[in-house]
Image (cartoon, rainbow, N blue to C red; front, side, top):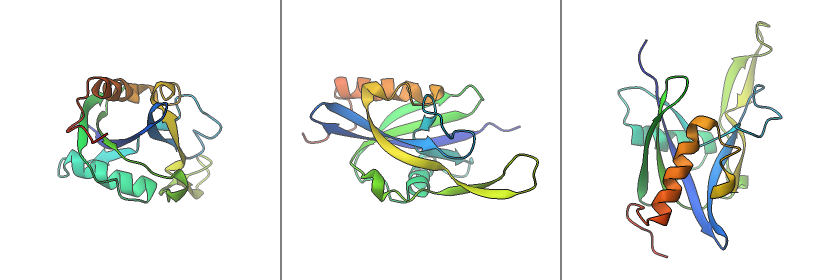
Amino acid sequence: MSARHSAGLLLYRFTDTGADVLLGHMGGPYWSGRHAAAWSIPKGEHGPEEQPEAAARREFQEELGVPPPEGPWTPLGASRQRGGKTVTVWAVEGDLDPARAVLGTFTMEWPRGSGVLREFPELDRVAWFPLEDAVEPLVTGQRVFLDRLGRCIREDRRQPPSAR
């Protein structure tokens, strides 16, 4: 079995009260009605033939239906998830009206074992969260990226720092 890799892009913005991050609530029947650890950074799997940066850009477009904002990407590194997948994430400063998102879909058998294929949104909604409040809703394996973004902002190590 080959190693699985995923790449994503964490959008952030500054408000009067600090930094916010854009997260997506995972779609489909398993996540319906859940809030804690049910939100994700827009990301997706890629094979060895695709560069992680290209995969992060593609997945942002596929999951949100809009291209990622232009601007410098700050590398937040990689993290091996509990299931064995390695996730690599970058952060980019920008703004997005969640109402503009056109959410992508996937097909799966539901109910399981029924033989019935149904379509579900990959993300069923997106929302901005203050950076310090995003920990609880974000899936556990991705929380490290919030810490890393916070450290980059505090130390002004974004690549390169944006004009303020």
